[in-house]
Length: 408
Image 1: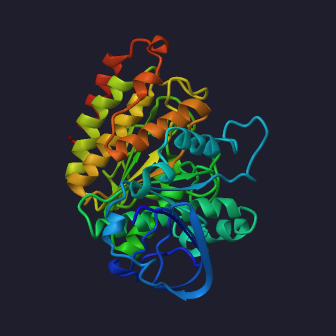
Image 2: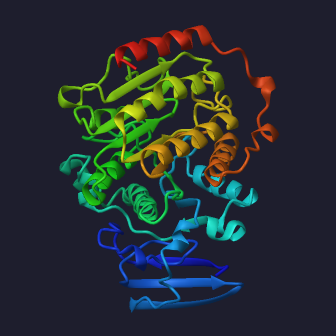
Image 3: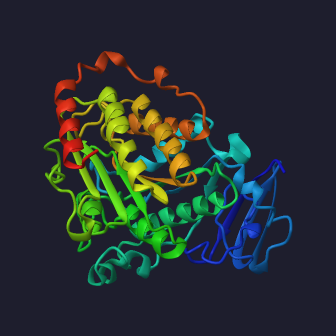
């Protein structure tokens, strides 16, 4: 059926704990639920629309074969946190809308791509239990009402994780997921907020994947320009979650030294690689091939999650790396392929930093193109005139040192 559907559910997150794969809804923009759920659903088919609400047993037209989900290449949702804003602050409420506008402009949305792209609408926030799996109970209870938008962001990551896991059970080539959310999360430490972040969105989803889906071995790749200290601290003693962070040397928050490798049973499952200022596409390509791939192949994850920060872009105002739109395209392409080879294609991206709206938006759009298996359009966007020589000798030394520390 060539249609665009939106399934807006009023049920809580925790979507697929008991959902049989034959009951997955046929929705180009959807949230997966049990076959009998409380729904408010609007469906658009070839320009017409209809709706229903209430406790409804989904009929055949809304509960198609699970193969419909297998046709998708990208699953995403957006939590822009429009009420969470401070004037002139770089982590502003224009970030996610700018990305969504660019996806529309580049014809990467369900309206243009049909069954290839799924956007999830009107999902529920994460539960207090979901958040408390990472953060202290006192912190969570104190912020539950005040920071509802942050809980929605965490819920978005859980929702996308549910969908990607469901798809991986019915196809060897499941869609990649992207939670386009703010506030970002990788700086939030277990005891409280830090650095633009309130809750650790990716950490919460990782614990959820372990608890609900039985995916015990989680590889987290963080390519934000700043060290993901919150994620680092959360899993520092956990041998089942391997955390890799590439970040600019000397940048906020000053953590993420090479010697920080984990502790106790988690020793060896934290890898921090500070990159010298000016590192760009060549540096990151070498890091991926010589470090990330080797770690992933040895660790053998059940799912790959990515803290996708776009503030390493050469045009971003908060740091001094030289990533380009093409760098992010290649990272998405390589990580998607790595997930297919190692963990049934299960891969979920979480938006972190990125504060130049144009470079952020186009880089995310090119990430979508990588997920779709389409060619990059970075040559039409990137300006090579702004680039300068990368410090490749320093990069090589950093790679050699981290390989020695982790016996790669």
